[in-house]
Length: 116
Length: 114
Image (cartoon, rainbow over all chains, first blue to last red; front, side, top):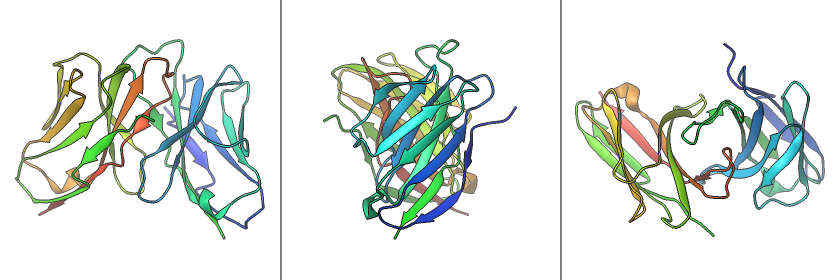
């Protein structure tokens, strides 16, 4: 049973560039959430995708966008990268249809993005 | 802005010691409280999801309590082992927040020395 997988594991980009991070949810899950963990902080909610639509969004600028594909996998895109975007980006999956009020999230290992 | 606070920030204990740490969260609009264990170079792993005031959950040597009226949760580890070394994250889910929309604390980093 494959868990949540993220790629790439590490990425180095230059200010102003654009980046795409990828996530495959745990088998049987249909919902993907993205989190940013900056150094010394807890993970911060970016947005959640279900049925190929963004359902909820945290306090992040429009430079952060996403997509969900019919196979439930997801991409996080960040445009016009800033130094402050350097962080660990975590993907978490869950099942909207099968979950209950006390279902946990299942996380991937994250993608470490460094912006220079 | 809703903040989840965890204390202490880090903790160093000897093997065999019992330890506990605290998560405080806004009690208004509370829906659920999550605890995750995060080992270095791995993914956060769910320990507990708690929703009811006074709830207590246990998983082996680890247990947690929840007080939704005053907005805090305790995580206890009995007889710490080196393999318990990890960062322990708590996260709150509020009414109106979707299943994937959690507000995380900064974590408590536990180091257990053999």
